[in-house]
Image 1 (tube, rainbow, N blue to C red):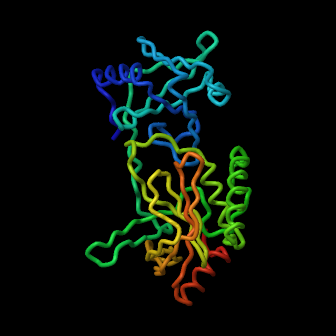
Image 2: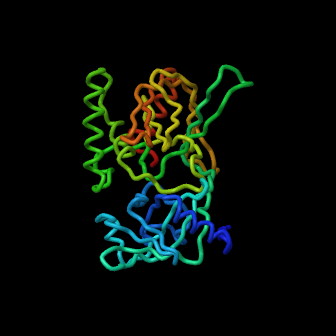
Length: 306
């Protein structure tokens, strides 16, 4: 249920915006889900506005000074504005309007908290990471499949959005140079989803600032798996080994059936974006059974399911 701020809460937020030099993000409403009040997925790219380019007036108007071409293209359109207030994600819907030679956002009466994105159990692929030396102190981290990535298809460069291609190419050049120096490149197809993730947008403001999210899976084949996480605190380090359970959905009449594959895993390489906000880990399988290798190979090379 959407939580709307009371009048008193709204006044506190307005005062906070005026005094605290708070950065905000702006996203076109037409590119968001139905209500526009959920935090955007990785497929939607909010534009960040630095606090030094904004002035918040007593009348509840945000003036934007030299906002840049990306934001200027929003003029005359409905947008969602997001920001953090005491680590809680807030948002409101308004129209980007012209104000003299600048742009302005009128803060409406209704300001809402950003909804938590519910985690729904589906029949999709996922992976469980097991840390710890005994059952008493074992930690299990569930890693879902990343939205918008074709986990079981051979990665191709056209999977990367055109507007992110140049940034992705720069990451690829750095990664390839490093891999060649360490002689760990292999065929390198796993680097395409890595570069795509590192070049992608931040995904917007979350319901709570600083909350750690579980890693997601970008790609998997019979030899390796690629994990990704939007967090400064990344659990993967090169050389670390851990146990892994993979859940592959199978085509049976009974819904919710999975083929479980157990293996040990070793982190081969870790890559981060320039801001250390997004990180990927390429991990190799080191103890998968022969029958499981054949099963995963069939699943991931012959496109038995997508």
